[in-house]
Image (cartoon, rainbow, N blue to C red; front, side, top):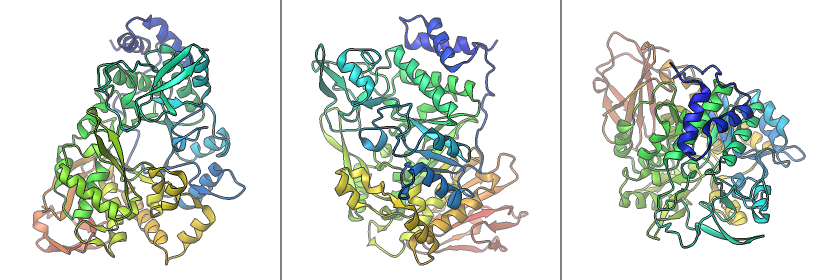
Length: 576
């Protein structure tokens, strides 16, 4: 007999909080979510996505118009330019914040009034699937909860993680070089709070079940405002135990399962995505047994794909792709090449050696990139991410420097992403071919600002209408390819995928639709030289008629040769 929702919830809570009354706590959480203990379960292993799903990642205020709330401007821009290509929008934290461009939240239940209000969020959610961040690991040091912590008042007094400078914290894994503990003066003396990311981002104490209850209430509020996709920000660091690495702990995985359980019982088509910027094998654990994240970010894809295109060699990308397990039904990958953050280097651990990583760093530095570091357990600072706009990251090659293939290389990168197993997500600045914003870095003093530009929507509209601009050319070609992708059953996020072996300069893989009625051979020249491959090496079925979906050209002679210009892609399909 399948356990009820109440039983499953109590079981998870007993595992996380062995000293609490698990049944009473389960009833409390069910009450917050307005769910019955025997609420019907959502279908198991259901795919809440298809080949038509393509996401956009953006800040609320990336596009702006004077005198207009940015969320209003964003909605209008989406409706004019992207509604026919993008059906999901991830709006990065749109709450009141004190630092880190939104990721130091002061109030989880308010919309930053400079962006708009909840009615604007709900309007966008009515037109596209909406993803929002649950910034669950930490909160602003300027929040009301933390002010109550200082005053030793509720709510907040016990909501943050404390530790002693005398504790052995040498094993703690974290992505920053700043001190882990920050001294804070409170009404009953000095205390040291845990700050994984910065002194303004104080880690929340999930060992206190009241904190969990607060976040369950926040989740319920987001669902009621139309948010159906939850990005669990920095969730890998959620649970702390002195003497451990404080990353990927058992309780963290249990809490993800618990949140998913409540979310999908409230809204069966809702999706949980974990943001865990860690080495690939560690990242894969967040699928659980198809009972934790519905989607995980494919964090190894950006650095490996960029490395492939600047070296003209796909060996590491191909090796990684062959090692990736097909996702179970009801789970899949979120594929991206750029985001609001930099190009992560930790996901290349075990995939690129140190010399190759340094060559990638040096190459992107020559294209205007900067490097952020993290501090390891032995006190050493190691490169953590490369901060650069993706368009400039693909300016040239490691061997030859900047060249005239930038646009072709950039489009090739996204063509590969569009065809891979999983759901593709475009950072808005990638769709727009936005270059490095060194001015913004100088203004904010933060390296990540290099790819967080802001556009006047009217200036941007003029650029997108002008065929002479790179923005027009890239935007329209990417939209064309997105449109082609969305019509192919073989590009369903869970369709079969096999890696092809076509040499080091040609990266290829085969996709087959879930009904096995469409095959697409995705073949990409990742070098700045023309490449030729024998069609016999691809093993096209002779009884089928083959068409390149991207160019419209038909393949008439299966014994012939496929000639690929630098950075050209072909999608050979046995159906139009």
